[in-house]
Image (cartoon, rainbow, N blue to C red; front, top):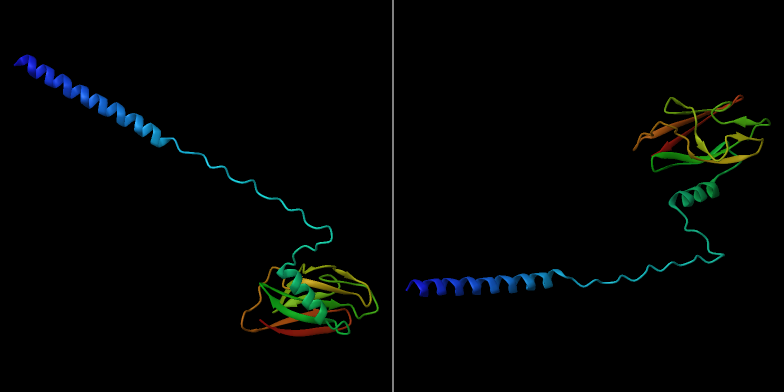
Length: 161
């Protein structure tokens, strides 16, 4: 009887071993996954005469410039994003420099450096200013007072933002 018990235990261990080895091989086969090749990205060359896409800032600039009245010192003022933009024209007979010989003030605060295409303007010359507010923010939902102090005159415009 002892021999029968030993043989039974041996066969049970043998069957369990075969079962474990078979499961292990199946698990290794399951782990191997097929590789999927991704197609190479297509690189398209822009046409030689193609124009680059126009940004919202460029559209805004074009709108302000096209609506500007260059017979006026300041025109086309409007709120765009967090800035007040517009066109400044030198209608004086001398050259002026924005933020130096022409002081720009928003809601009582002097703007030290406006963001304009040009800061020095010859007589009759205009420039687009992307940001006339400098580091200051405008008051949303209220009238914002923009003041331009030239040597000979003061121009005051109010902008509703």
